[in-house]
Length: 429
Ligand SMILES: NC(=O)C1=CN([C@@H]2O[C@H](COP(=O)(O)OP(=O)(O)OC[C@H]3O[C@@H](n4cnc5c(N)ncnc54)[C@H](OP(=O)(O)O)[C@@H]3O)[C@@H](O)[C@H]2O)C=CC1
Ligand SMILES: N[C@@H](CCO)C(=O)O
Image (cartoon, rainbow, N blue to C red; front, side, top):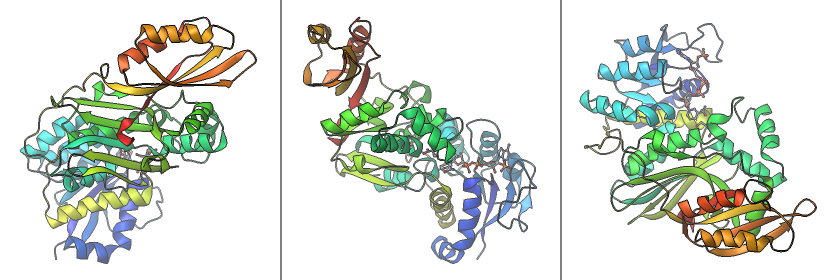
C-alpha cells in the first residue's frame, strides 16, 4: 500500500499533535484510510528546538513554501497560523500545483476563503479545514455533510473556549473580567495578547466559515463583532436570577431573500437550553434545520489532541479519495456583505446604573416610550449608596430601536454608568 505522504509546516501545539497522533494510532488510521499516512517533510521557524518527538526521518525545509514545492509529497498541511505571510503563501503554492491542502487556520479561511475556494476548484485540489472551527468537534462535517440535505435557518454557537472559560469563572466566583482574564493568562488558558479571543475575532473567523458552509460565503469585514470586556459579574448574576446564562455566541441566519445576517456578541440564553450547560473551555455548535430541527454538539474546541484529531480526520478523507468542494456546493456565489441587523427583531436585556430617587423610573421609561421600546420586565438591585442597578427585559424590538434608546439613556443625568444592551438569543428559546 502506497502511503499518503504529508508535507507539514508548523511544529507547534497542533503540528506536534498531528505527528504524535499519526504515530500512536498508525494501525487504526491505516485501516480506516486504506493506506498509511506518513509525514515525510517538515518545517518550522527553529530547526534546533527539541520538540519531544523524533523528527529524524523527515526532510527539513527552510520555508513553508519549500515544503509545498516538495515533489515527494501528496498533501500539504499548514499549521503555522495567521491569515497572511507564510501560511497564505504555502497554501497558495500547494493549490497552484494542484496539491490537496489541510489547514487548521480559521483566520486564513475566513479572510481568503473566497479566492482559495476558486483556486481549489480551478486546480481540482481539495482544501480541507475541519480543525479550523471548534477544534475537535466535527463542526464542518456536521454542516457540510451531515446536514447536506437540509435547509438551515441558523448556525453558530459557542466558538471560543477562552471566552467561555472566562464567563464561566466570572459566574461561578463573582469575580470581574480583568481579574479572571489575568488568572487565565497566568495559567496559560488565555494568550498574553488576548484581544483576538476576548474581543470576538476568533469567534468571528469560525462563524464566517460556518456561515459560508450553511448559507453562502460572507465578506468578513461586514460581520458585526462585539467581545466580552463589558460584561460584569453582576450581569451574570442578574441573568441567572432571570433564568438565563450569558455566553459569547457567533450566530448566522439566512433571510427569505438569501441575505445572511451574522453577529458575534455576548447574548442571554435560557438556563435550560443545552447550550447554557456548555461550560469552561468547551465549545458548542448549534444548527436549526427545517427538516433536521434543532441540534447542539459540544466538545473541546482547542488543544493538541482534539485539534490534531480533526486535522488527521481530513487526511483520512483525502487518503480515502473523498472529494468535497470547499463550501460544500459545486457552484459557489462570491462572498457577499452581511445583512444589516438594524431591523432584526429581538428581546433585549438592558442594564442601567441609575440614581435611586423618585421620578427616575418615569424619566427612563419616557425614553423607552419615545423609541417605541416596550418593557416586559424590570427589576431593581441596590448598588452604591443612592444608586441602583436596573435590569430591563424588553419585548421584541428592532435592534436600531434599542440601541437608539440606550444612546439616549446614556446622556441622562440620572444614568450613572454606560448602559449595557445584550440580545436574548431566541435560537435557543
Ligand atoms: N492550538 C490550538 O488549540 C488550535 C489551533 N488552531 C490553529 O492551528 C494553527 C497552529 O496553531 P498552534 O499549533 O497552536 O500554533 P503554535 O504557535 O503552537 O505553532 C506554530 C508553529 O508555526 C511555526 N512557524 C511560525 N512561523 C513560521 C514560518 N514563517 N515558517 C514556518 N513555520 C513557522 C512555529 O515554529 P517554531 O516552533 O519554530 O517557533 C510553530 O512550530 C493556527 O492556525 C491556529 O489558529 C486551531 C484550533 C485549535
Ligand atoms: N483561542 C481559541 C482556540 C483556537 O481556536 C479558543 O480560545 O477557543
